[in-house]
Length: 186
Image (cartoon, rainbow, N blue to C red; front, side):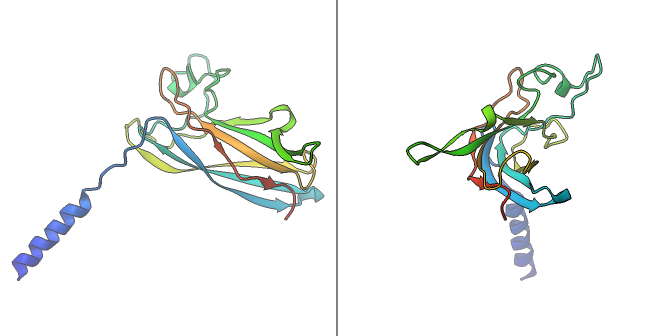
């Protein structure tokens, strides 16, 4: 009896330790998970803190950039071309804003906010080493908007995409669109 129990235990351990790695494409895939909105009034000014939660999957794990090193002769690959200052790949997170606008016929459409406002920034490396491995998780970005910038009740929608660190040209993810968010109302 003990012999069979030990054999069953060893087989169970062998099967549970064989976990198959997910098979994701090398181009990052993202999805809008949610937007968390916190409305408050610091110094009497109505303010929304928006937290954008973006889910990601990446087959080779090359997401994120270290902070830019502006010193001449910097050797960090995340500060050199194509990720150097002024390059379209300098920032790896892009978020475009669209405002809901009522048309003359009464219909509602989304148009670029204030002539095409776009938030661009770097998000840090997801994996600290250079190992090629599939990654899955969430990236969170915060943005603060006040009643000095938009009227309460303004409805915005957002489009987002990211770049990975693929060389010589980074891979662009799919573009995702958020649900509409009504600003500065509770």
